[in-house]
Length: 143
Image (cartoon, rainbow, N blue to C red):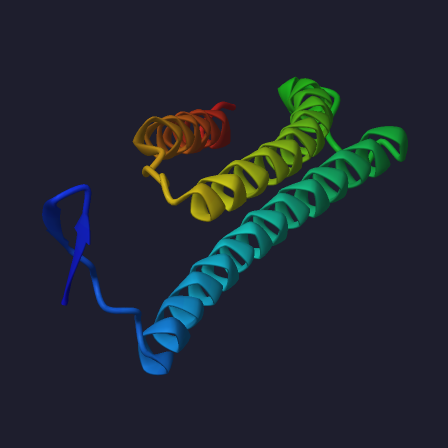
């Protein structure tokens, strides 16, 4: 099909049929649903980190206050466990804010059709998790 405008002939793309429109709509909806699932995964992780942090904090305080631990180096480790628990709660809250920021950013990018992967974010989160795990392993073997 072609159209003549001002003496020049140009090709006119055929109008998309109903199946193509449904396919595009389905693809668009699938992207938004995938974004929501990713957001929920971030939220579950943040809630788990916060819960573990609260548990560590409360349990170490319980042992510390009831003097069920030795008065040696273990008591000092229990204090640091309490602080680690607090740090985990703060990290979980930060993770939730990051999840919301990422969700909204990706949602806008999907709607605008210019989504790009956030490789730096993935790399930094992985690096932070590895450092935290390494510090946890070192802390476990301190006496």
